Length: 203
View 1 (tube, one colour):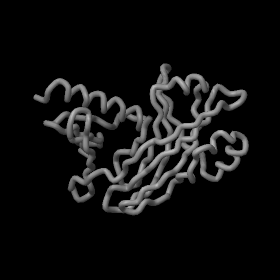
View 2 (cartoon, helix red, strand yellow):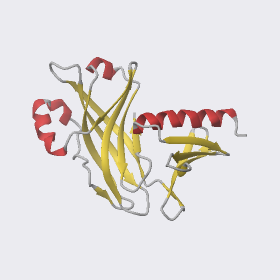
View 3 (spheres, helix red, strand yellow):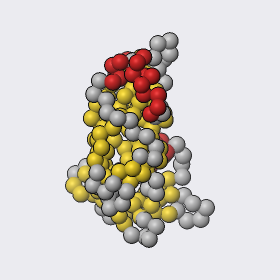
């Protein structure tokens, strides 16, 4: 049987993935020094990704390709800058998230969807990123958002193998600015095509 800490990490990973994806069709299992991520299909659960323990609180990630081979997750990066402003007349914050995204895989990485996620003392909120064509309008209304901003990341953007980009997304969260500033964490969630697990960059 796996050790208690490994079972604990598997349960916590399952909780976070279900919250991130917004459904309960994901289960996790401790298997030696691996954490297996399974998708619940109509029949048997299908293993789609795994985390392998590399050291204390360090894991390497891989996904199962269509050929059945394990391949490293191609996306990685860092959340570099967070700028937030209050939306007048609303209990909401508009947030610019600037990050570095790298394609460490051997194939092109195509962006399918982009979201932002914030965890506060009152719970977790997830919102879709605003359209890149609206950036100038937001910058005119809220000039602070433009500080340290990079070009927008948009669906259908592509990264070649080995390529790294600095990009910005803007997200509206239904939380007061003071609550956002006292947040526990904030993340950019990037879902590539043909990849079962999103790229999550947190700070």
